[in-house]
Length: 110
Image (cartoon, rainbow, N blue to C red; front, top):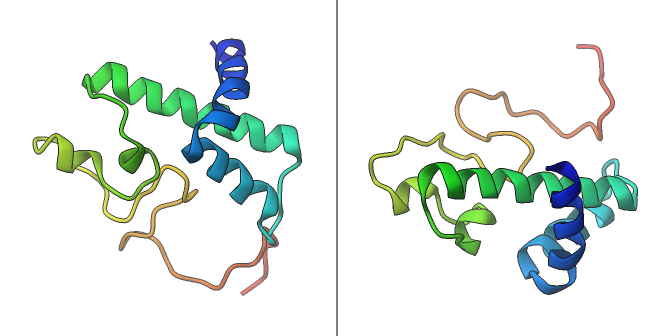
């Protein structure tokens, strides 16, 4: 499955603006940017997560949901969702998390 996602990512990256944007965001971020293959692996993992949701919830692929601009619960009203969660955010920005200044992956003692 991972090999199939890796190979599918190579075809999707230059032709899908959502995955291309995610790859460019990862490789150009100022805070702890991954290497090129690590970023490609993150895109392949996102592809697998989106395919899982499409198969288990029987929804069509929607770039607005994939990018986090719209929630899946809007498309299927019976679903509950976590507020502030985006598949590309890395963590949720809801009320359960503390807001801190970014530390670029370095832990500081408080």
